[in-house]
Image 1: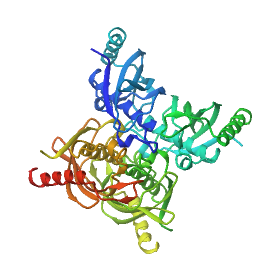
Image 2: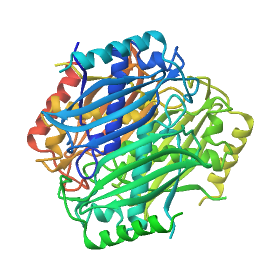
Image 3: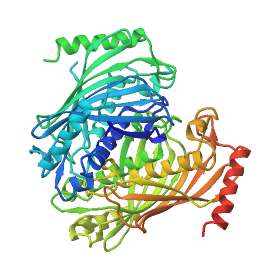
Image 4: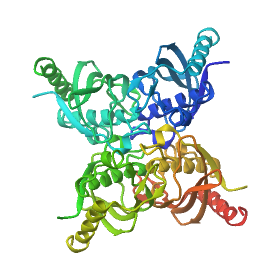
Length: 143
Length: 143
Length: 143
Length: 143
């Protein structure tokens, strides 16, 4: 299994008067990438996480470099891999590129919480196991 | 003259299904803070910057820690101070707090560009002078 | 007491590559206007409505005409008045203008709901009374 | 050729504290539907329209009914058909449904403009011809 990727098209709604992606809109694409990774790789769609599980995964920190601007119509390839798992957190490395040009790269830390998104809680065992598997594969298999 | 501050109210549009601010919306508030700093302290409203000046100040990097969640109705006090000025860039420290509790703190680097927001260009002298003045005051006057 | 008004500045985040307000962003300003009307005129801030009251006021329909474009830096004066109250709904007329030029006008219907925003419920008596008072004043006092 | 449809998934970014789609976010999905219709059916991607053509298609009016709420994870099927073409405008009927339940239906009028999105201009002949063809098919072929 390779690194998780999600193509996303730059739409009118993402662009600013300078004709490039307004950077807060990138974070909506980043969130969509995280959502799909949870659904497709961890087996926990956000509607399950926020519904029956009564949980949430708020972002505790995020650090981004914007390497080059993106324009209307560009199809960005988002790539996500976990780099570290803690008792109640996970560290992710995400980047986006278009036609081989890297547009942004970031590291973020997400925290597993229950009941109102305030206190960190331990990962449920099944989610932890799937993240751990992804982590190993990101290290060993994705050259 | 004290540090630049801008109060912003957490509205329905900022909140997610967990009832707290969805973090990409914070960046809209951060952008509004930067806009008002440019208008009120540097004398360059964004409509002038992006209009007659044909310039832009895209964000090159941003690093944020989210310390505590914000909820509907909270009034967040955003505080901005420059920490370094380069030939074509400025480094900003921004934080937001509510009733004395810090909610987020960040450092970002903005780059001055012309013509399509792609190539960094030197700050115009008058803007550079005003940023430099703010920088000195942030260091000396804002205990 | 006059019609309820709320000034809102057109920011970078509202504007599209054509340099004018991207119309979905107007609805965020409309929502902010409704929020402030509930807080200031009906005595029910949204944090109370969505919190202790366990209620919501989803929009059932909205019909808008965009008369002229708005640009970065424009300060729009939003004006709201109720035009009809039902058992569980209220009809609002809202417009926005800048320096005397009307930019948009709309009519919307909001519905009072409880528990998951699905079934319409009767207005609580105190809220109904305040809307009714606003309705009378909108008809009689706001020439 | 059948009616133009575009499936769009309800994501975390679209939902409000009541757990349902915040209605301004629907308009981003509507805009994406219009963009893809222009690209796939009219042969004019928005990057061409707003780039080389120097044109825009601002929304002049829109009237929407929200029939039922949408929730996180729902896949909405957006359907678009033109209902009338004018010298410089087009009228569209758009609806969205999920698993056979209609969620919203709307009518909007878009205007073709050049140079700063302020004055309506006649449709270029090739675009007009393609809209006319879509119009006929919407009337005759899409039972």
